[in-house]
Image (cartoon, rainbow, N blue to C red; front, side):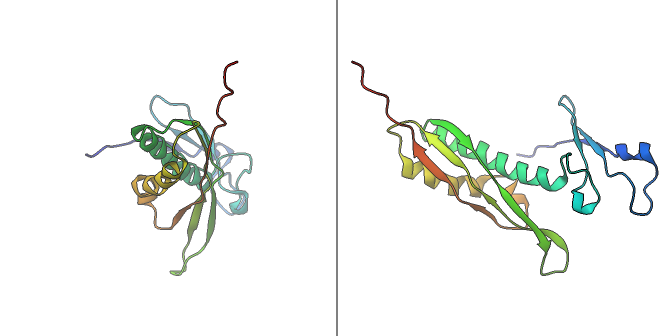
Length: 160
């Protein structure tokens, strides 16, 4: 299977003047056909707008969302009803051994609620499987760690 994706990135900061020196605008717009545009900039550390999405945010979001979607598919196949899922991923950018700056690691911290009576241990184990099958995690050159918390929903109260 081979799938192709396309996007268009436009440096919208050009409207504020040319890229010269350090005071130029880092603003950009990402367009993907048929989808809402995403406005972004660089991280404030690199002269960007802290209120806008930056490439580092989007990479972390891509890792977390790919893991979540893979995990949900695995749970559905295993007949484990997932009732809620949220994640608070973090990533560390720094100097690598080769001297280049890049992501050193990312940690996903999904919190999952499954239906009462579902197999919590199996649901926890599926995070490891999801990590191995996530397309985005397989595409990066740094470790993506997982610290999941899985809990079963409270059983409904018996009918009176």
